[in-house]
Structure formats: structure tokens, C-alpha cells
Amino acid sequence: MTQSVGIKDVARAAGVSVGTVSNVINRPDAVATETRARVQSAIDRLGYVRSESARQLRAGRSRIMGLLVLDMGNPFFVDVARGAERTARDAGLGVMVCNSAQSAGEEAEYLSLFAEQRVRGVLLTPADATGRNIETFRRHNIPFVLVDRVAEGTTECSVSVDDVAGGALAVRHLVDAGHRSIAYVSGPPGLNQVRDRRTGALTALQEAGLGPEHLRELPTERLDVSAGRDAGARLLGLADRPTAVFCANDLLALGVLQAMYAAGIKVPDDLAIVGYDDIEFAAAAAVPLTSVRQPAVTMGTLAAEMLLEETEEETGVKKHEHRRVVLQPELVVRRSSLAAR
Image (cartoon, rainbow, N blue to C red):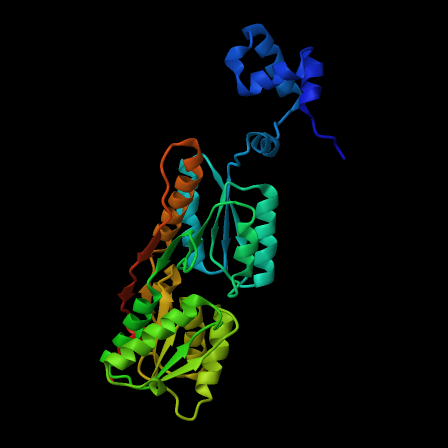
């Protein structure tokens, strides 16, 4: 295995001190032109690359921002990452993107990794419903911002969407179309987003004078297409099958749509479907999917801006105040829910 070239190797090759090499790298104007050229020649000849991580540890300020999301297989979180990465790049920072896979255990491991790497800060969509992982991470005094989750009972910043309003938009649309028996394919019940969207759905039913029995919940262990197909199979097995289904995200909705297509059930004539997130694939589905749109890129951008503002407070660049930003969702109506009842 080839041994990496260190600063001492460069100093030896150039016939100068380690301090002179360090000055050439970090403060070139402080070194005489001839000496600087000799050191640079040695750097180029040996292929020396400075250890950025070591430099950051000495300075006490990392140039890496951590981003930990529930599922990078979900295009919604890809868009969140795009917004965060663009903002971080403009500030001269990089983003370390990690995927908890909706697992509290994996979330804990990645948060520990962020602490070991002493990242500048973390953007986090929590997977652990108990909050223990956040409490443990807080001890490291690394700033973090919650994404797609309201910071309830904490002092941290958060950027989220009003999921209660989003759930209400979806079910109000279905009720207005004449549906009185609606299924909610909900995902893991431990996720706040899942519970809030259900609360919104029940609110819309109540507004229409309908009780909670008009909403039949079909929980799933995951928020992906496969779980949606499984939920669709369960839906098909119901003796009194609902006429409409609201899904906690678009991947679940696309899975339900696949199950209906395979069984010969017409969407929206036999079953109306509404998703959530309005990912790119929603409009491109075989039956274009009605969905509640979340401004994912904006969420990532705002969260990264908050984190940068907080981490710059130490240098006196800007006074940071913790705040919660709650964005509003928007219903995008397409063919999957348009049949008259």
C-alpha cells in the first residue's frame, strides 16, 4: 500500500522547515517568492494533498454540514438535500448526506458519526419518536435544525410544513367529490408527520359532519412503493372497500395505484387516490396523481440558512435567534381523484 505524503516529506524535499511549508499553504504572501516556488514544486512533484480534516480540527470549525434524512430513496428528501447543498455550497461548505432508513438505531449511529467528525452543524429529520437520539446528540453542543418536523418543546430551529392543514386539504377534496368512505394509508404511526396528516384528515371529515368511522386507517411499516402495494392488497380484501384513499406520501400512493392496476380496478372511477409531497413522479404516473405539494427545496434552503446563521454567531457575523418556520402546503389536483361520485 502506498504511504501518503505528509507535510514533513514536502519540507524535506524542498529543504525548508515544516513551518515554511505551512505558510506556503496557508499564508503564501508571507514567504519569499523563490522559497514559495521551491516548496510548490515539491508539493506538485510529490503529489501532496493537505489534510483538510486536520486543518479544520485545529481551527475548531468544520466546513462540513451533516444532513440526516428518513429515506434518500424518496425524491422528496432528494429535493430537500438539493436546497441544503446549494445553500451550503454558496457558503463554501460541503454536505455529508446520510440516510437513517427510518431506523432509530441507524439514526443514532449517524449522529454519533457527525459528532466524531465534528461537523459544523446538522440538518435532521428525526426517525426516533422517543427523542432520545436528539437528547444524546445535544450533549455534543453541535447546532442542529429539524427539517420536516416542528421543534416542539426544544430551543432548536425547525423548518416544517403544516401537515394538519395538508391532511385536511387532501380529505376535504375527496369529501367535496362525494366520497364518504375513505382509507388512510398512513405509514409508521410513530412519525409525527403521519399523525398530523391523520389529524388533518379527521378535521376535514368533522367539518363535513362526518365522524371518524368514515376514515379507515391502513398503517404500514415503511413509506415506500412496496408498502403501498401491500396496503393496496389489503384494501382490495376489504368487504366494504372505501371509494377513495389518502396516502401519507406519494410513494405509498404510487404503490396503491400499482396494486389497483394489477387487479383491474379503475382509478379514479372505482377508487380515487390522493398522495402527499408532489414528487416529480406524481405527475408522470400512469394515472397522474393528485397530491399535496410540499416546498421541499425551500425547506432544505431555509434549514441550511438557519444553521449557517447559528454557526456564524460565534464570529459576530450575525445575531442568531432560534425560530420555527412552518410552510403551507398546496393541493395539486390531477386525474387520480377527478371522477364524480
